[in-house]
Length: 287
Image (cartoon, rainbow, N blue to C red; front, side, top):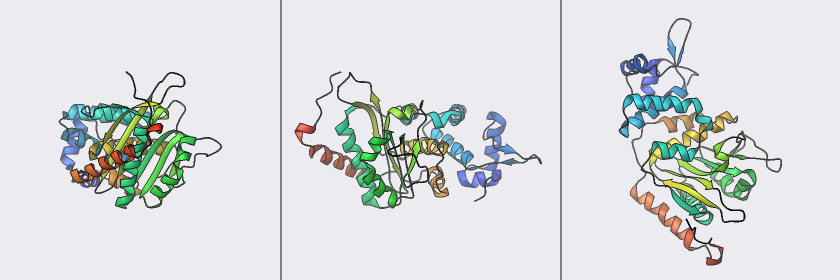
């Protein structure tokens, strides 16, 4: 694969004909690519991602002009975005739930365990707010990364466990003003399975229990959207995912997570919650 390529290659990789791509360029200035001194357009993997996002928005019924406009706006700020906010904006039918930390931990472990059990070389990504939070789960993520196609975790790392974008999993430093510093994310994508958990921590009274507003989905489009946000932020922090990651995240959606797989994850969540001793469960959240 070359660093840049022609509109014909872009068409092959996205399933959109060159004529349609040229029509989009004339109407919307998209995809932009870059123009060589000879006047030819050249495109990159980033353009493949953007075209694929437009196609997914169209499948959800978004008008073409709004789909293109939304993708262009996100591409200008994607490395600063919140995973949770992106999912809520792109998938308004996802219903956020206020969950206690123990419940969110059970859901995270269920998704991670399903990923390990399938052993299908997933891309596995996570955000952890602070480095010491990741350190408590490092043994799990070391095992997830060991057999993954690629894995990365994003957090505010410190001297006790410094950021290392070339590690496995890649440890990527979040900027001081990143909204991901208040987020908890687990996302896994493979050819046959996809799942995402994305949450942000709701400000609580001093000494009060931690509460998160979360969305959980096994919908492939939602998991891909979350994965792209995390991967873009990881790249901005110096990580270099292999080409196979982009290929997976830009491939047309031809399969969905099956009902059986979704049921299995839900049962794993219930099993995790049920096995938590009553004395360790947080008090119910009072709105």
